[in-house]
Length: 258
View 1 (tube, rainbow, N blue to C red):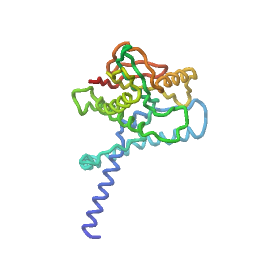
View 2 (view 1 turned 135 degrees about the horizontal axis):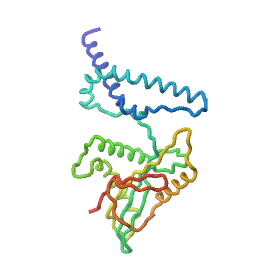
View 3 (view 1 turned 120 degrees about the vertical axis):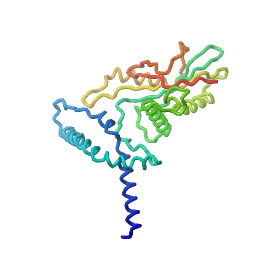
View 4 (view 1 turned 135 degrees about the vertical axis):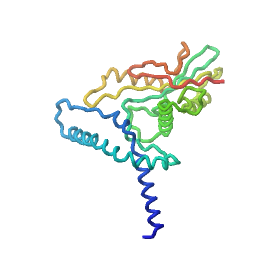
């Protein structure tokens, strides 16, 4: 094989090695879920088999990262030059049910009221969903960037709360749609709030209390149909929390209208 072919082959191998190593999630991300689970005497073969595989994977992952670390130091500048992507979509599974709601603060002749809208998930989670709503993907992507910016302490606009600039496009989209479709004739939108909700997903050996689950569904149904409103009691600040059934809501963004 000619020298040029050897060179091209070497560059291809280097590229493949760099992309493969960049696709590996950080070791600390895997260790977040490195929790030993003991079956409560069920004695079933399949869970025990998967536990054995998981135990082997935990032992092997440290060796893989130790071996790849020197090589990744060499390939990292190449990746950071323009190939840096996140491929760890299956390494960070959700451990909670997540919801996103938007509160629209409106001033009208009758007084100030708040309208609610549940925007994530786009479809009722208790029903079989055949189609896919790309709205969900857009919201998930925005919140991934939001939490990543908070974790790293980096964000585009230093005049706003860290990470909140990642959510501004969501607030603009839904507030514009609300103004066009739902705003009362004598009303004016003065404030948009994005609330991020989470509810626990219980382990395999446990089940959610039916009363608690029914209360959660009842709460979510309140937010699904516009217009649902209440009188404004007070203004909330970013980071404030409130509970509704077993859902813990946290205010992620406040966007005041000019």
